[in-house]
Image (cartoon, rainbow, N blue to C red; front, top):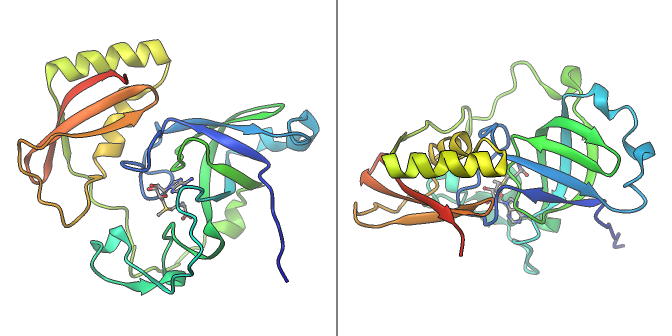
Length: 231
Ligand code: SAM
């Protein structure tokens, strides 16, 4: 038997493309967005009481990774992209039913809108459900995951004077912690693990409405080159 589900809302996120989104929530506290609820959930009644909660679980669709053919094994980027694991041993985006789950910080509750931070969700992500985080049940003391026992080690991120000045100006315009967002996301080193970047190669990503460009002067160092309006 098949069941159907429908989004209760969509996330308006700082992340406009999949590249450079942290691999899990909480890794970039400056990553912010708004969950815009759809009728009938855009009524204040649906979120009454939620202001008592600091974090929520979001259940959502990996809408830009949905595929028809089931995969039994995947190659998680976290393991360098060259080791395959059973799909159910991972949090890969390519999975049965394409369902993701993230614990995110709830900054503000309004009728029809939840203001979030620490997100790892692409702009436009359809959300299927929201549940309050319950610390005594959801934080399991002594839990073990030998494949992912700690957050990825951050790499060094430095700024050119021009890029820092540009980022500060756009941060003011957007009223967003853009400098922190860039530093927190790039410190996760978004390039594919197998790629050794030549120093002349320029990488880029769109956060909010700006293009962020950087290069790797050394393989384990990022230097920001510019932060400019997306054309
Ligand atoms: N925390 C979630 C989980 O465990 O189910 C997501 C983990 S998944 C490894 C994180 C990646 O999902 C991000 O790096 C981003 O590139 C990708 N992603 C986020 N939103 C997406 C969407 N709507 N469609 C496809 N991929 C998405």
